[in-house]
Image 1: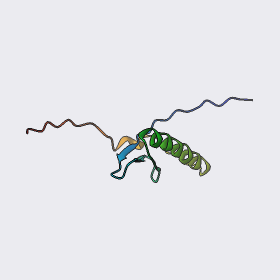
Image 2: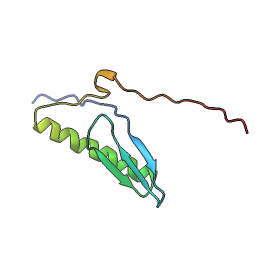
Image 3: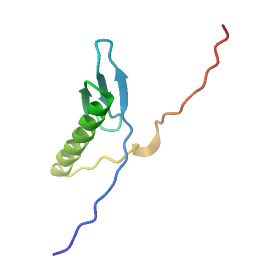
Image 4: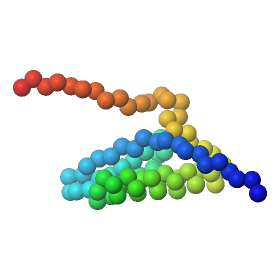
Length: 84
């Protein structure tokens, strides 16, 4: 029996603190991959599971989505100083 090596992929997730409480989260590289949670930790765990399910479905359909496909888009922090 040949053991398969586990792949570790890294995806960026965008979290939004909702006005009514909790967090919504989505993965820009995986269209339609969204989740939510009452706490940040719950939202993080839920989106991790959503990513795993998304990629399993992608495997079944014989296509693969790679992190930051073509790296055409990226995020960078921007510091802004407000004078008050």
